[in-house]
Image 1: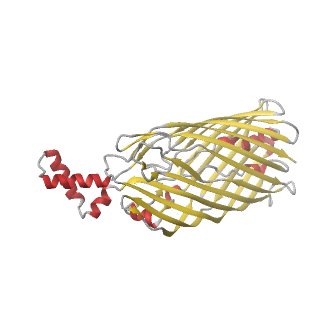
Image 2 (image 1 turned 45 degrees about the vertical axis):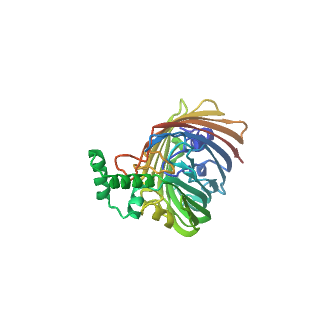
Image 3 (image 1 turned 120 degrees about the vertical axis):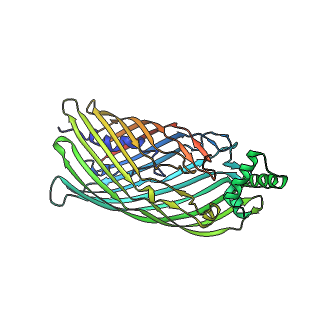
Amino acid sequence: MKLSHLSLAMIASVSIATISHAAGLERSQQPILPLFIEGNYAEVNYAYVNPDLKGTDALGNKVPNMMEDYGMVGAVAKIAPTKNSAVALFYNGPWGVDSSYPTGNMFNNQYGATEAHVKTESIGIVAAGKPTDRNIWVYGGVEHQSISGNVKGATPVGLSKVLERANVSQDAYQQLIKGQKAGVLNAEQAGQLKALQTSSLAPTLYNLDFDKETTWVPMVGVAFEKPEIAMRTAITYRAPAKYSVHGIETISSPLGTSDETHSLTDVTFPQSVSVDFQTGLSRKHQLLGMVNARWVEWSKFEVSPPLSTQLRNGEPLAEYADDQYSVEVAVAKQFTPRFAAEIRAAYDSGTGQPLSLLGPYNAVTSLAIGAEYDLTDQLTVGGGAQYLHIEGGEIPSDDPKTPALSMEDSDGYALGMKVGYHF
């Protein structure tokens, strides 16, 4: 079932619009499939993503879209010194977040807004070869990744912090609440309860600025293929990305702005395993099928800068409850020698509850279409569009009965394009 390079290439390239908004902080699955495109090849791609997330805070205020739209640029340059070897350079932005809470809710106050702008870049080199069997590829390489950004958290002081400062236990506070409901509080007790509740709503703003940091990330993989039926299975392991982030932390409150705290925080982006499978489905109808599966170990991700951890009573600034599991299925058809198109559906399990304030969403279900056209024997163009259904959830507060933020199920879309050149 021999298919032309067009159909084989589009599985690797049109999908630029389909892995653009995933669990945790993931923006790109860092695909390695262009490594297997026949001959020498170069590509530049771009994706635009517009998620629309909204919810309601603990005070009943509506929180409109707090996730900003963003763009992603990727590139690859691959050469094949021999028929059974290849070397490729990859550029992308594997992780990131752009969020900002608008006015009119408890996450935006007189000192500023809860927002996060984290950017990563990755430049990697991957080499592949067939050591013995003509149907088996072994590949490996290393990526140089960098991270930089700013995180702000505009939140009330919080009841637990106020009780701690006032030396009032949770049991004593609950007794005041019960007394208020029963109408048996005296004036002093009523005044104390009101003061505690008012103080707990006092605004604060936590700010973390961190400089650009870099690290090296190794990856390895193996692939088995049968070109006569356009079949290939590739398994790729990518190691954790470990950073030591130098940051400056401050807290603003009615008492003023704290002195700058210079901190060092260890941040480890998760390891992952990806399985990419494709096979010809019909020679007569020129159909190609694909299944991708992926595991990302988000359950061990944690960001705990010292001042933030103190402010949050020992809770990390960011963490996730569960690992991410995703699966993607696609069917591509070559309509003419120069034109092919595909449709694909995907499900990403998310990272579980509770949600993260910096990226408050869970599972993502998507449906995408894409197409690619050979302008010449060397030059190809492609594009795709993706619909996103984004599952909501809750962010807890001091009161277990009232979440700080309840997120609705939401929607979004992504658009992607690429230009490829065979040489």
